[in-house]
Length: 287
Length: 273
Image 1 (tube, one colour):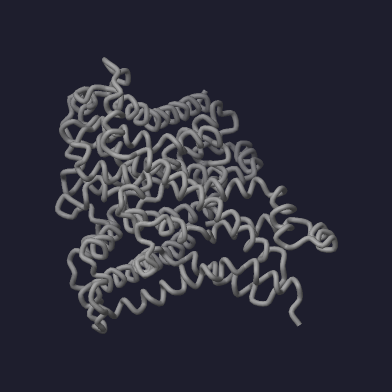
Image 2: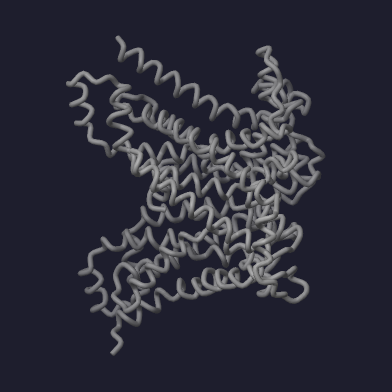
């Protein structure tokens, strides 16, 4: 017999079930099929076996994009973690005045569209008329070709992304810090431990679970890098800021290589999974 | 003495960081009011005020229409997410039915699938449905939020079962219970889900770029992006930054009003997501 609860359970959950079939199950299965196909959306699909994977492994641009994305992550994540830890620890001091002012200020870029932030920084970074270079000139320093040098462009984007997201990680870490019992610090005070010692021996170990969350979140976020290079550099100069997502976008919507783009998507899902697993394993053991 | 020095150093660091966060925004606003030649300098007060940059934006692109599209799309998405997440969240939290645990595990699993995998098939689906260049393409894929379901389920779990039983005995339908009984008691959770959904929808740009090609259907971020990168702005920095400022204003206004809710919502979404 079907009870009233049973019936209404399914009725109320039905929007998700319908959504799951259309927006999750179907796309995943379809994507799995596309991986073995050549398809430009105009002519009919053509089965090509594992050809897409062979292409992928020999595609220098894909590996370039993957390396670029890793360059971005290697600069972005440590910079972000260190700054967020420093600022959230400072904000956590018990007698700080203007605390909510500081918190709101650092959080501002988080709520603002990446489009706005990127357009703003594109101007700040401009080599000839950019604000940063004008300030450098004013201090009698040399101009930096922020977005026009193959070596500096990706780090420049990573710095901007850190500025954009820092507030979010400050707030998450701050919540973690506030959960540390004050009594631990008081005991350390009595034992004569300095503030710096307290930071490394109490704060860091106690905030470790939150730290892992932050690292995983910013890794996943970093792998979705798209609009920043799309607006700032279009992937240039010489593909030095081509991110994997920008590459997938180009393959799919500039060249209409749907099968290949789906293969790239799967490859990236695998890479993200692998990186996050490694991070969890490594960091949990380390600290 | 040493403690005091450390404290001042702490303030100094915070103030320097605060300046690097506030100054660029002030400079951006000032750049939209300056003569073009003056933009490259760090001064915040323009030598002469001019609204020419804003005038250019309004002359060159239908930014008012884009604003309407953004409000309509983000508003619909937020309303639908709140309604559907509440229904599903309530079913998962308060109703016992076969398959409930399975459904919950499926949700957890789908949350871990990166959007890179589903992006291409989703676009194909929109083409097959004939939804490319319609509001449906922007609203439909976003109207269920697994994050919203999780958060509301968690919140609804604490709702007293006895009250629900009483309402049932009075002959109330389950939908009535969700929206007339549980909702008024769940305002903080609804605000959290609402803010995050609205913000994500307002700021989304990758998906609109893919499914919308007609200018009159573009949302603000997409229109501003294409305006800035497509050469329509004639590389006039003041004009580009004026368009960016217009795009930022609605969310900034909401942020200034609901600061605490924004920050707490995002912090909790970070921890749970």
